[in-house]
Image (cartoon, rainbow, N blue to C red; front, side, top):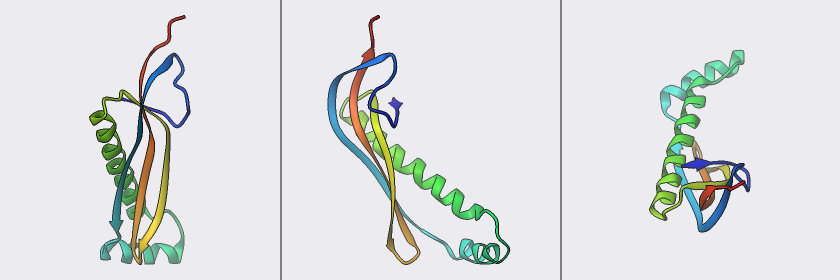
Length: 108
């Protein structure tokens, strides 16, 4: 599956549009990460626990979007975008979406 955040894929042409596909996940912080983040906020630096949480969230949301694209028979997703939003105190949604398409190599 080819995944790009552009309209076109160099060397390929879109032969069929399957439609919008999306994936999301809602994750909450855990107590251990909150304590570690609180200490880190005092001295500064990367909050590695939260970085890992967001990375896991992106991976899961992407997997869900790609599974939906596969079910539609697509072999690529174009115009991929990510979005986040707070759902409740301590929980956030990570949302990814794009357009599922069928592409084939361009003839030159």
